[in-house]
Amino acid sequence: MRFKLIVAFIEDAHTEAVLDAARDVGATGATVINNARGEGLTKHRTFFGLTLDVQRDVVLFVVEEHLARKVLETISKVGQFDQASGRGIAVQLDIEDAVGVAHQIKELTKVVEDEI
Image (tube, helix red, strand yellow):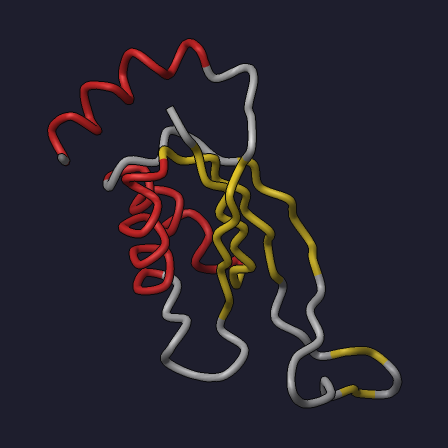
């Protein structure tokens, strides 16, 4: 079984909704890293030297490759990435090898066979 790593940078207000939606389309879990800061196309506004940023989370998903595109599109839709600049971004990377996922293989096999 082959896997993809999806790395999503999400406004923290959308994190729970994104996690739930990703699970609904096949993600088996995620790792959330809180309090990330991003630098986009334009500089952040400040008020007396304090940055006025929306808090972001970095969410890491290891998903089976046949489910990865659907998970990626769902993350974008629920996170409202295309609604306005700075809402979020997600990227998908190939995973050459993975350990610690053997307990998920049986469940993923059923899901993938249903998808194909």
